[in-house]
Length: 278
Image (cartoon, rainbow, N blue to C red):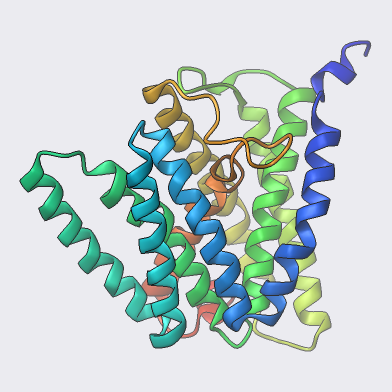
C-alpha cells in the first residue's frame, strides 16, 4: 500500500479544479436558454482551438472553427437546435468543397464541425426538452461517474489493458468500473427524477443505457487518445489545472451526446421519452 499515494498523484488537484468549475456548469444547465448557450459557446470556442492544436493545424484554423461554432450555437438559440444541426451539415459541405479545391486537410475545419459543434448543438437540443435540465444532468453525471470509477478501478485492480497501443493506461477493469459508475449515476438520476414527481423515466432504461453510456464514453476517450498518438500530442491544452485541456475532460461526453442524439432520432418523439422510456 506504500505506493497508493503515487497511484492517485494529482487526484486532489483534479477534484479541487472540478469543484471550482462545477457551479459555472450547474447554473446554466438549470436555467437553460441564453445562459446555457453562452456556456456552450465559451466551451466551444476553447474546444475549437484545442482541436486545431491536436491536429497540428494553424491557430487561424482554430479561431475560424471557434467563431463558426459560436455562430452555429447562436443560430440554434434563435431558430432551434434542429435547424442548427442542418446548418452544420451545410457548413461542412461548403468547408469540404473549399478545402478540397485548395488542397487542404478536411480534419481541422470539417472534422471540427462534427467533433466540436455537433455535440454542443446536441446538448442545446436536449436542453430544449421539457425535462431538459434533468437529461443534461443525467448525461453529465453518468460521464463523470464513468471517468471516476474507471480511474479508480483501473488503478486499484489493474489487469489486462483495454487498448495498449492507443492508451496504455486503460484497462478492462476500468471499463467495467465505468459501467458500475454509470449504473449508480443512472439509479441516482432515476430517484431524482421520480422524486420531483416526473414519471418520464423508467428503471428499465437505466439497465439499457448505463452500460452503453460507459462503453461509448470509453470509446470516445480512446478516439481522442488515438488522435493524440497520431500527432504526438500529450494534452489538448492546459486550461484546467490537473486536467489538461478542455477536450481532455469532455472527450467521453462528446461521444455520449452524439449517441444520445442518434437514439432520439432513431426512436422519435421527445428526447426524454426516447432516452428514458423503453
